[in-house]
Length: 312
Image (tube, rainbow, N blue to C red; front, side, top):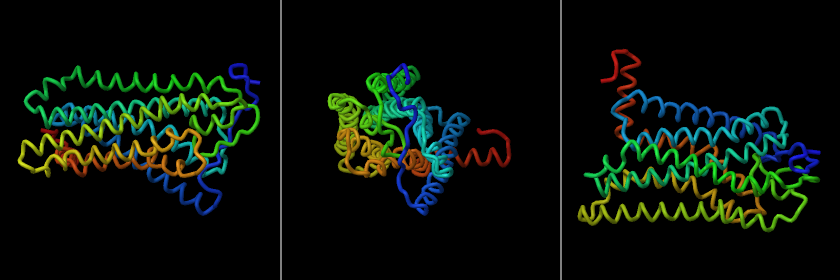
């Protein structure tokens, strides 16, 4: 028996997404290809921003940290999922399950803060352009990143302390492809009804409040631009559309799962594929292919690689 949690369960079985062999094969290649794209795409953004001095601005500093958080969030679940699909071994030990839960919420909570910081950056750039560099100073940008990690850790610990002490003495099948609070709590040998409210208050309401705050802030920015430009919203909408897309993709699964801590359908499992595999891959595509500065930087980087005469 584990002395720290009075549990006779030493490992969990991840049920996964499907029992079909053909679906297993499809999911293996799906996750493998997407994860490779996530690694290459996000590291490419980090490398490009670091090496190109033209991109040493607040928005790209925040973008680099978003890429690192995306890579971290995806790495909490996708490699294990690929391994399970390739070996048909769906077992995860109790300590690894708890570690997975912890880092999912550290990186997820941090990403919420960073998306808020990026919304504030766009608000300042569009609505207060003359004061942009003063407001979004290097100190402010670093503060946003530090705050993202601190909030992420607090967010994870505030729920983790309840789950780590739960007794698990019977069923050990987690009805998902990864460990998370709602699914694991269902397996506890005690009534976890009160802990549902902890999940709702912490993850559910935070996700929903942050999502609607971000959407309202983007609407406010668009209205401000509309008033100043006599109804021409095209430039502002192009600038903000990438941010709005990322926000919707990231927060929709969070709100769906954590506002209903004990789901009765498997839809939440499929939705979280978006957060772990699709959104981290779309972010590099959205912020590079639809961003003029990044496209120019990519061309400069390409010329530097082909003919290493330096980036001017």
